[in-house]
Image 1 (spheres, rainbow, N blue to C red):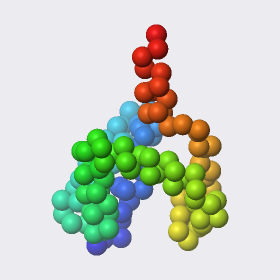
Image 2 (cartoon, rainbow, N blue to C red):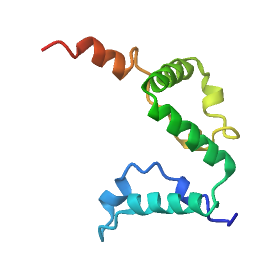
Image 3 (tube, helix red, strand yellow):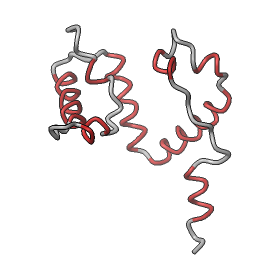
Image 4 (cartoon, rainbow, N blue to C red):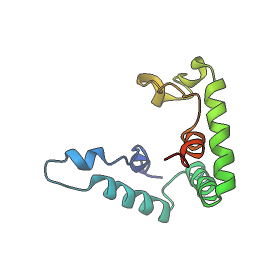
Length: 117
């Protein structure tokens, strides 16, 4: 594996980089294409390959997605901060703080309020 093969996976692909690019390069699209290339030429880690495979299955099945959504919601509420912000387990969290977890999920709120006009 080449030393730069993980770089395309170090972005959230939110599109902010494309929005602020002074020469209007669609950076998010380019990163997405490089991700595909890294997977196609087997330059991505096996763990990443399996993780994306699992996510694909969860996203393709609405019941499984809702179950994962609930598990993540309650899991995040129960996970202690020392574990969330442990720099050895979660280097990303070192300089970031997650927003407050709401009392209900968006889905729960939507289901409760979608019939109200």
